[in-house]
Image (tube, rainbow, N blue to C red; front, side, top):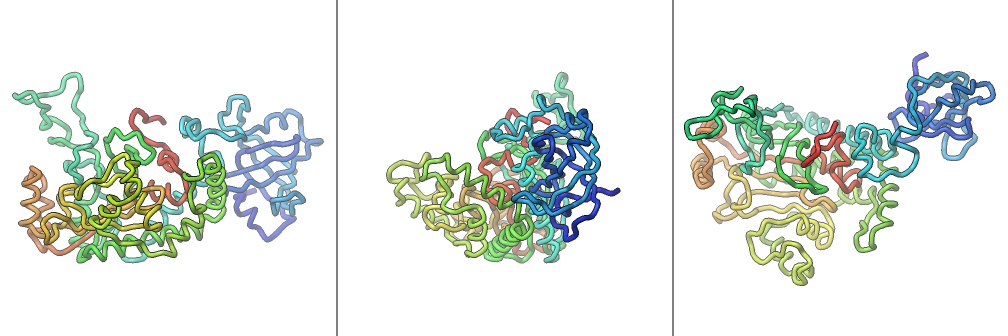
Length: 477
């Protein structure tokens, strides 16, 4: 008999039918009640074993973590909290699990312990829910852009350019470390390397994406990116996924409209399709918040917060206005910020971004027109000569979730900016071609997918929303 998913069994409209279910034992009580889960839903199905007619040896093998196949009759449950259960007529142990050695027991584990067992943590309710939400959000990303005629572009993972200009990249090389070829002046001779030049793992597909947008009109990338930043924080990963749309003929206002509409779409899609998982994660968050001081607790429950983003327009504020607000704020005056805001031109930190969102405006915020000297070379210079057409979207609990800009489409201005930053024109001649041949206004943004998942699931550490986190000193599994 073909087995039926637990989710489909629980949503069934027909009882007294013989069914087969396969999954993993969450708990086994009184030698009689199996809580079975197959990953299709946060909910378990109760399987009632006829223990008097089941061999003792079989009963001993029904342990937490064991994989089993149960066949029986689907009936309305007499117990509270469940609609149906299976009256088991046959049970087969597919894979044993030593109860004394299996790390994931039916008790509360710390998130740090679960990170150390990332290959098994998905068998818990919380991580099963997070990964299902992540999967649905991923589908929603593609759905949004495909419905609107965007072309999905796969940009290189190995690249010879540094889109951010930050230099914090992982090198890709096939050269031997014990006998590295050197030039006459003692530098590594990359001409003898696999690609004949210095190459790295990409920090962004934006520059390559721009070239496609200038032919296909509107494109998006969605793939892995890498940052060699030694940032051991709850918001940073060395390997993460980025969503980067790029649209020809869009200015900064169009870009802000697109980003806001996109974010609201994917959050609504998750609310519509992950109800049980999000409800569970909301309860988990409420329990976690009880241990925090009142001042540190979220003002809204998870579902309320998600709906708040859907129901409220994002507040659009210039960087200059934001600096004035922060400079005059109580935490700045009382020196409660770790980074005190004294003057225009400061690079905003997460604490400043969260203050604007959570304390001052109390809604998502889009900051725009940043100082040119704290933003990337490709952002369009404003008429004032000191700010660029950049934008960041700030979310409660997260800080920056989106960064984007109108691109500098003027060849002469772009060349001057590259010279000032000592960026090699020859290295990026292919990028400059988009300004030489048929240049036009165009804009785009990047959204760190894990930060989106972080916000939607209510988790507080980015390491808990990616299957196998890569962080400084940690590349397990």
